[in-house]
Image 1 (cartoon, protein in one colour):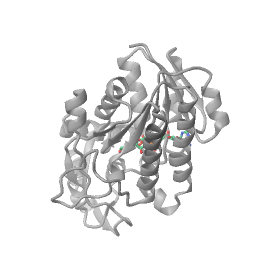
Image 2 (spheres, protein in one colour):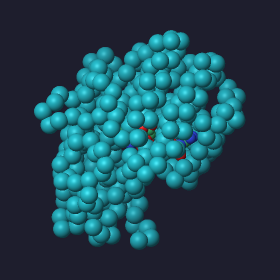
Image 3 (cartoon, helix red, strand yellow):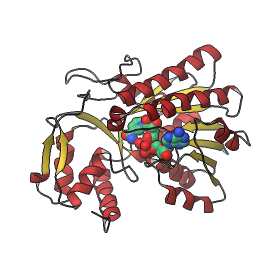
Image 4 (cartoon, rainbow, N blue to C red):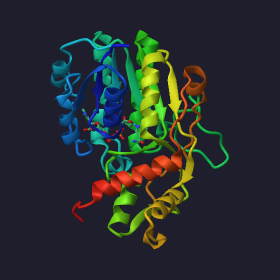
Length: 320
Ligand code: NAD
């Protein structure tokens, strides 16, 4: 299918992987708008502009003037990744989270209403569901929204805005809620890149609390494939969970990475737990599998090994 699409936050971790995935696997014409925050990859996104199917505009989704610059044409779809995404930053100061995650999403819904895009895929997170005990079943799309930190609260707010615009105006929107991603281009502040970076430098690896928090991990390209499928075949007004069924304790992830890197577990240092730290996330993605035929294609162990190698190469020569 020939498509002209707009991607917000396409210079970030998942957005950049998604752009590269679409350029490799489709004939789509792609426009990215990204304000190039500290979490973005300017070099990589500007490099893609040599492709005639790709254009990049530096801009803030919250600012109407910036959005007007990309609205020089109609798009079959807008895929909305742009966000402030680091929980620890939101605990220190949630201002930017409220601006980008809530107000930014609101601006896009207003532009959807004006007819600039034929559909909107709102990329959200499993963190909006809050936390599970060790015996509870994984989150389904019917699980209550119960965010526990300012980041997930702003994402939940944006999800509710999107939902309301479907219920009130019947706008063509779809929300996705994915579990923790890993892969190339994730910011060094995040869990897996931090472990690899510290281990590369033989430095202490900080592990929150007892390290027994559980996350459900998915390789980023499987997330990209899911979003592509949902964009083409998803039903308006629906929410789709995306998850790998790879529940792992944080301490297991650290030990596995140290094993891959042949480093000592003595590098692990337990530090004071994060405030409001969710204990367990697990996601039931059977709706996406049964209704749209999505399947995870990458094995967790193999893609983790590839990811570790990617960061080792990246960190070679990086300043200490
Ligand atoms: P990221 O922080 O790596 O990238 C975010 C991108 O958005 C950056 O390039 C940044 O410059 C851009 N951006 C931020 N504010 C902007 C603004 N006001 N205007 C324009 N661009 C702006 O985030 P990520 O990890 O790639 O996450 C992308 C989306 O996926 C987010 O909405 C996040 O909530 C969601 N998500 C992430 C994960 C995960 O594990 N990383 C899991 C599920 C869902």
